[in-house]
Image (cartoon, rainbow, N blue to C red; front, top):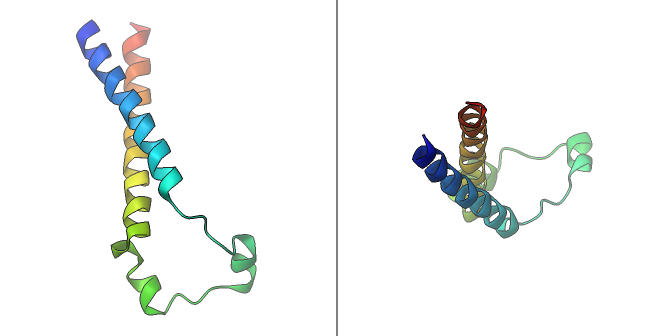
Length: 82
């Protein structure tokens, strides 16, 4: 059990570092709350293909590693309770 905990802890720390790097690489979004009130055009080419751009890939990777982070947090908590 100790070996599994140590391996998962190393993966956990690497996941934390990757999330930090991914967040720092992303550009800040302009508009924010004002875009919510006024509305934004979602029918242009960029909005439809946003997932294929560098920003879209960074966002998707951030979500993926955040989910891995949450799952590892739960698993490590359960393992450390025993």
